Length: 421
Image (cartoon, rainbow, N blue to C red; front, side, top):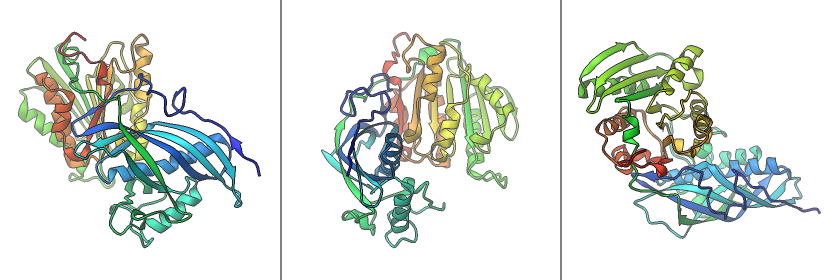
């Protein structure tokens, strides 16, 4: 028998998951959540390979199920900040390998719940496709032990982690492990030093040109067949209604998927473009060019629609053109977008502001829980009216967004309002 001993560090951590968080990572505030650090000191997983990259990939798949478990009581995890240290990989008699690892998760914890010293994560025994398939067959639809939240969508192998609820009544995993299928990991919890409070958007920077430039994209719920009653279409039109009923209208151009408004705000002109798309990954070059011309000058950019289990969030983050010195708030308003956001937007802003910290010109708002279509217009309106009034800390603004979606902001730690930017 041979044993492979190795260490793998992810996401730029220099000393493994116990190291102090990289302060170049954006910090955190929310109307309803607190940031916690979650430490898994004795992680274990069955993996299909002793190669570090493959073993690490399968452990990430295993830990994705923490998102569903946390969602079950209003929490979430940002997987882009997962720090993983693979410690030991030992061959098994069946040709697979037992892996031991430590991990650190960045967790959004519902503020109304006390923070326990530890919690148990109940996850698949491994992250390879065969183990996860057996896990789905036993605890997914038709498995006899309902460990998932009901949904109108088919629950497949690729998305079971999102709907996974091991503490649900009737789930066999609520009482203990099922041999060969699941494993129970103890996660230590501590309030993170990444929490902030009392920070506001940079209102002075937003209004320095006497214009609030808003670019808001709405994705359709069901793009085919076209329906006036589609939830995404309704949200798109509802935000238009909110704006023209609140502010004097200076000019407008309106089509079925492109609304351009100039409104008279308290501190200047509100220049708002609202776009409706079937899907953010399906837009054509004409839309991309239109969107990029707007992101170059926008103060507030939002996408409200399906997260696509992260695919839509990543597609949005890789679009856009940015201008040196342009401060922006990005609202990625999809289900569990907190779990999916990565460094792409921050990197794009650093590329045009190389002398500045990654968060100097960028604040990102995401959701630790699902954001339903009927909430989308009101959430955008809340941000626009706050910026127009130049009033409200982030925590106050986010507390006015529907509590179900648990919106959080990251990157606000270096904001100075009401002091000079």
